[in-house]
Length: 166
Image 1 (tube, rainbow, N blue to C red):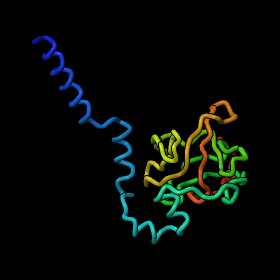
Image 2 (image 1 turned 90 degrees about the vertical axis):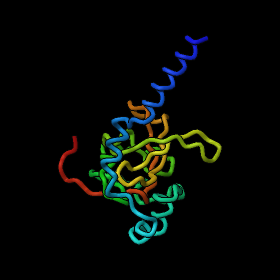
Image 3 (image 1 turned 90 degrees about the horizontal axis):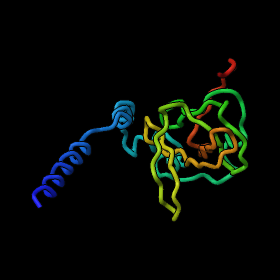
């Protein structure tokens, strides 16, 4: 009986110690977005109403209405809220789902969270710098990554790149 209690106490101590430590990813997230912890009033002043609804309230724009849905210029797609680069145009593909689709993101720029809203299990994609809602990630992409980052156009800003991409 004493042995079982001792094992439980030791296990609980390890668990509590691990819970108090941030992972490397969480530490990086804290360091990169510390300057972007803004109030809703800040975002309402900075963003148009539709961008605010999507980025700050986790909304979704209507399909086939976004500026970047069928946009295929060379360049970089950034977060509309904080201008952090998120996707290179070389990762964009036509999915016909109604929203811009990418098969990869720029490393470390996006955070992934479980989303069970609307009675579905999805992966929400969030700007790692300003916590803006971008869209969702699905594992039904047609390219070698098998991924489809389904992103709201209104959550993106685009900068053309005349140079050859990687």
